[in-house]
Amino acid sequence: MIRFTKVSQHYPSGTAPALEDVTFHVGRGEFVFLTGHSGAGKSTVLKLMYAEERPSTGDVRVSGFAVPRLKREEVPRLRRRLGIVFQDFRLLEDRTAAENVAFALEVTGARADVIPARVARVLDQVGLGPKADAFPRELSGGEPQRVGIARALVDDPPALLTAEPTGNLDERATRGVFELLREINAAGTVVMMATHDLDLVRDAGHRILELRDGRLVFDSAADLGEEL
Image 1 (cartoon, rainbow, N blue to C red):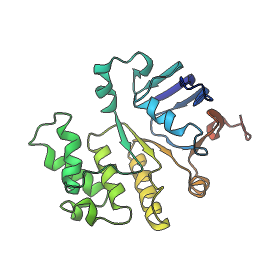
Image 2 (cartoon, helix red, strand yellow):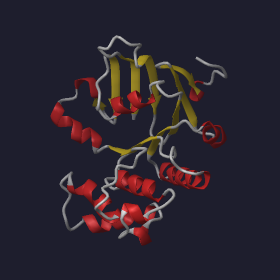
Image 3 (tube, one colour):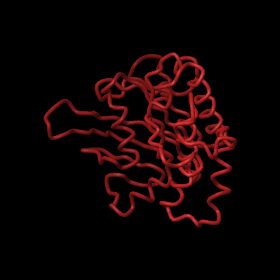
Image 4 (cartoon, rainbow, N blue to C red):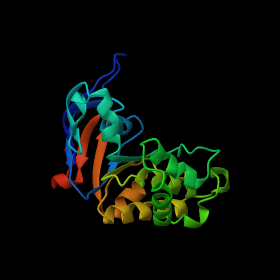
């Protein structure tokens, strides 16, 4: 599903590399935490997955696409295979929850007659059916993030990438969003969750990839019992 092979990412500024010789594979149906301190390389890993960036060296493959050789016109096809949830939600403030979700289908050219049913389905899935006509300013707690998740899911992607999805939430909302992500994963969707929340990571029992200064230093699936 997702494969990084000896991936390094260097920037012209001459600073330390964002990633250095990172290798891992995420198979179908996995739930994976991507952890590490601020600046460890988590955002870079996600950007490489959805082709916001191309690796300096190494190979990145996502859902059958070879990111280093991806043509510009192929990038939208890759991104339709991924749901992406950002920490800041990025909701359109002048559109309702339903309209925010529908927008994701409109930009990909979905038929207008199928959009309302698909939007209603994913809003129900994330527990926001009754809030379909609410504007972002009328939502509270983890509800804006749930709209973001619904928007990411509406095209039925096989993988969901989430960047600090609980970073701005209180404990109750954090647990609610996390349980929603687990339900999505249980239905067959790969979930990659970048997070600083080590308490959540430790208690969850899912696979952990830990980055430190651009290097992958721990993979709980490696069955080593110690850092790599």
